[in-house]
Image 1 (cartoon, helix red, strand yellow):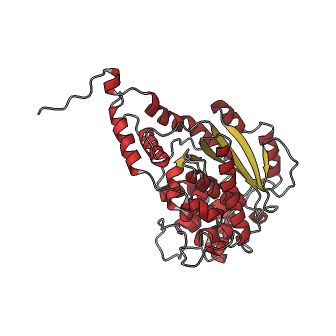
Image 2 (tube, rainbow, N blue to C red; image 1 turned 180 degrees about the vertical axis):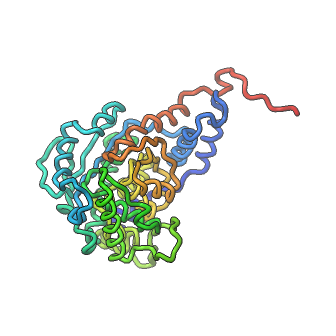
Image 3 (cartoon, rainbow, N blue to C red; image 1 turned 90 degrees about the vertical axis):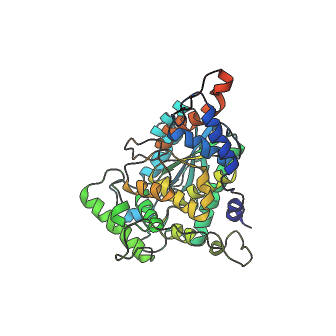
Length: 387
């Protein structure tokens, strides 16, 4: 077995007994049943992930910002120069980005992973040099990645998750940086949901109408080139995502992507970015270690679709931190069946929305640990009606 196969094999389905125990415990707490709304279900899902009730407190938390560049930038999908990716990496490392400010507020550590920045970066504290290539290829001209690169990117995400957890993290937060990465995200989301490009392609950093129209057509061209475009005759509704391909043949070597994840890896290689593939691996890695992964915006949503295609049970580790202003993100969350905790029309990326949601996730679990039950507090419960 290679790393992806071993990781997928280690991901358990949600523990139904632990989830039942968590719901029973919620019902005994000194509050009206259901009064904490979605937070109660978050705690129940995390109990299912951990296999125990109450689940462990999801702290401390670690943010991994995966940074990479995209060959599709050459198609004029954004007015921002590609050099901004490397410049923002430097900004993260000196603590000057929004994600640094938000992470400092909630006590989360920030690690930056160079998974495919076009510029060669100097060594620096907080930077993990994991460059697979100097950006992806242009997905409108051919595959964005080779199959081997896609596998390496997923494996890198798994390794980063594993290392952060080994270092003490008990909650993982997805972050990303890459000029033109919302274009690749739209292509991935369209491929995994079956929705047309115009339904899932947003304005990213705030592009004008002409650039937005061009971006939609670039996504359409990439999907058509790789035979990932849904037929116009088909209804524009979400479809079943690509699933892991099962094989009766022996498992291949680590560099043999044809036997690992099948269609999901092919889609990632065709139209994804290095950060998407790494984030998919990051989700798989967290799920295999029973550690929750708080998802950020549209880039994380696209990556989570790939992770779910590789292993549906990986969704048990995922919490949707927020819903971004990008239309593709809402489509991805709907396909994944995840409800966002925050909806503030954010569209920054970096992990910012997920970091803002972290106290909600932690609070949902802390209630299970610290709030008294009716019996222990001597508080009378709700009287049953005699009528």
